[in-house]
Length: 179
Image (cartoon, rainbow, N blue to C red):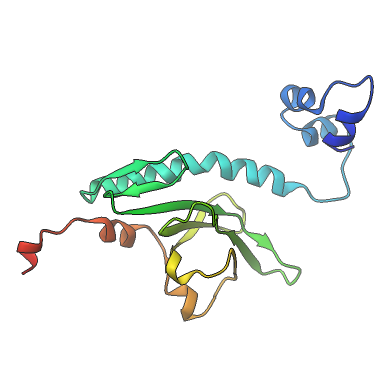
């Protein structure tokens, strides 16, 4: 039974009661020995990824600060860097294709219009970050992007093992020193 069916049934507590009491409907079902036919592991993966987002945000902000730059969290969820450009942080889970290969589906939030999107691509188990993509909005012309393990130079040129490149981009340089 889905949360909607439970909520519409007379004489039953709302589905939120089950979620609060057992952690989730799936957890309540497992306690009574029910195993749904559909694989709902992605629900737990998504919950873990949402919990990971603040840590990734903190890592980005700390690295930018260490590079001597400034960040500001905007009410929209974006971060403003050096009062000059905005960035969105997206964590994408690994989904197994029928062929057994990993796929990642990125949805860009067109309403926020960040100047860059920092994508943390999760590994096969969705427990650790595999790598990062730093995607400038001017080069991303679709609302969705699908990544494979290897994507060709047109996309993999934005791929990085860590965020050091981003931190370098954010550094302020005195123009008198450069000249």
